[in-house]
Length: 116
Image 1 (cartoon, rainbow, N blue to C red):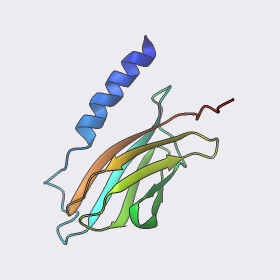
Image 2: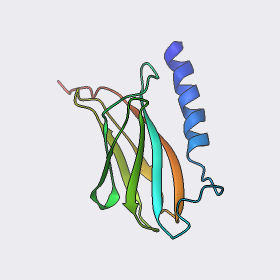
Image 3: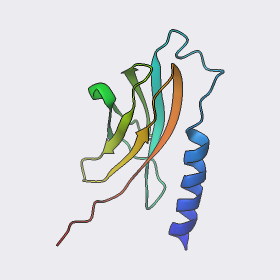
């Protein structure tokens, strides 16, 4: 039951976080900034030191609060945004074509089950 509640909270958070902020000055020059948080899917806790990779081979690392900022994208860029942890947890979201500005995302990472 706790897992279902966490999924609902995270889904609501994802919907809220993926909206654009027009009040932020980032992107006034046409640049794209993807900012977000990496959380553990099971516990909801922030994940530090997750490597985040995006289109155009852009990369960032999450801090102790799970926060990251990915720069170097351009308007029109789209594709997978993946977070990977040293312990094997992974998660991803798909970026829609970007406009200039700042976009907030939430990436949930979980252990990958092995086929066997």
